[in-house]
Figure 1: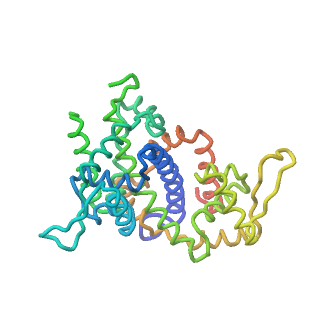
Figure 2: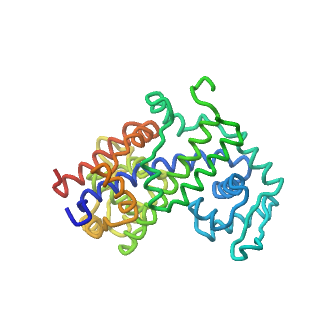
Figure 3: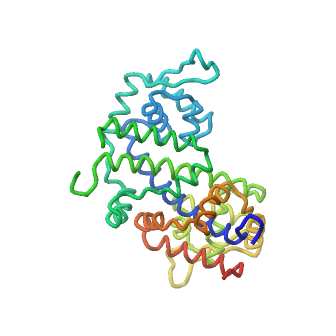
Length: 175
Length: 175
């Protein structure tokens, strides 16, 4: 044991296990996501930009970068492609000239809503999570994962996630 | 509510939350992993191939593909690059001529062990997990994630993970 209250081996095992589990789950989600948005001529990153700008009712490039977990230049380049397709507009705010602000156009909103309508809940992740739902009554909350993400990316990440989830709940009139 | 005991909205919210959490955690692990193995002139996939072949004491390309969560052609191509560097050999087994079998060479074993020696446990994931460890006494087990991965990839995935973890424990004489 070292001063940091964990042994080198413990850390290696935990890192390895988390690498395997998170890679497995993310790659499965990534594949489903790509298949979902491909018919709309969008890739995952482009759809993620639309998602963030839609649910946050406009977002800065740095918010998209942070919440989308993509490099600032990636966030900008995919936003630029969406702008060229007339799906969003760039602007600067009077009060904050440093940040580029992204807002969906009518076409962007319409396309994004079409993708949501086409969302098939019967995907791999849902099916793989049903046994847990059958045991607990709800889909798992993963508060431990939330805690780790909070410490990796800061409180802001979970705040944006909560705003985004709240917006989905509100949009579709959930209690 | 539909026949499958969950509503469309519930599934959308759960999918969105899991996408955000798993992307955030995987991208952080990926970054740390790349930084860790870069000094050895390896990329993440190459190191993952070495990892799997090392701890499973040899592996087939399809095991590497499955456990490494990479396409069979990706697993083969990165293995090929490692073979060209003299770090592993390809072979066929008498009993099973269909599968290509990967085994590390002495150089491959030596290089892999050097990477493990260089593993810095003080990385982002560990630091972000310490608050949970302080609460629970151990790093989180994530049995819910294991259940989901089991249903996504089959029992075999967790069996290989357990063999790999067991091998790490044995290698470094953990109780």
